[in-house]
Length: 76
Image 1 (cartoon, rainbow, N blue to C red):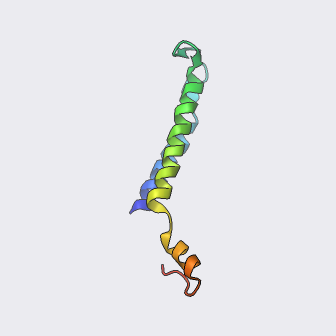
Image 2 (cartoon, rainbow, N blue to C red):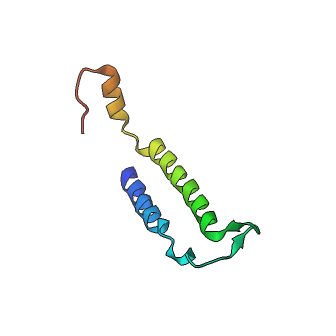
């Protein structure tokens, strides 16, 4: 059940990456940062968080155990 959650969040981030709603917006965040750049900073942090979450909960531990032991192929 963990892996589908990661895929859903990935697809959501993929869709949010195409921020066409900020293309013509010239407003500034904190007085100096263009809103599109601020969006991509937030997006990059969210992508890094999703990757950390994927590594934490969806990493295939069975394959690592198999590689460390080297005897039997992993069970599905």
